[in-house]
Length: 110
Length: 116
Image (cartoon, rainbow over all chains, first blue to last red; front, side, top):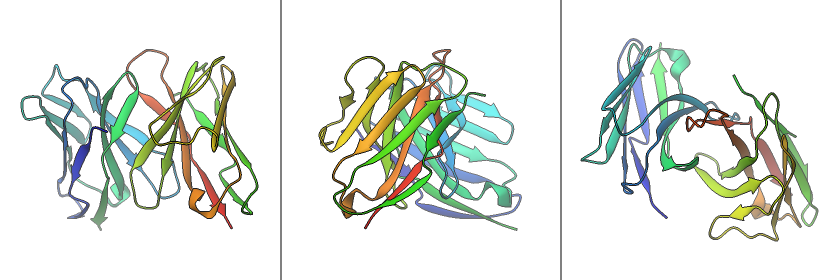
């Protein structure tokens, strides 16, 4: 199965800092790259997503940077808050069949 | 926004029994739903695609006879774990695609299964 590699596995950031999570994919046919946030015992919730025809997308404090040639994309969380502490998953795929990364456990210190 | 509801949110059963998990789309119709499995502190693994009115499509390595999927209506898909064993203990999550073909998946809250 195609993999989506995600790093780092865990991340600790001070309140107000920038959290950066990276992902790399293999299949050039993928056309949808979402980021999900998951709290313990809950289902994932979509944060932001991007298509390969743009290199960056920003929604509030969340930004996706996309590098098609390198087959990499990243999530930037600006002004990180303690409430952002959660597990973040990147995903990649097409027609709703997505492969998820291994997850990044983010802890934002108050 | 669209809501996907799962029931039960957690269930404990004895080894050898069967457990049914329901996934409902509350304010929209979904001809397709997806079932995922998630082990503790691990990623989501797609198990199968549930298709309304037809057979489910299973991912490689997923036992069809173990994980029975039925999509009887446009708002309900069910996953039945048959003859459950402790190794089936996991977090099962369903999802449904948005109506606008944007690519977005709406996930349910998940169902925690513990098999004793």
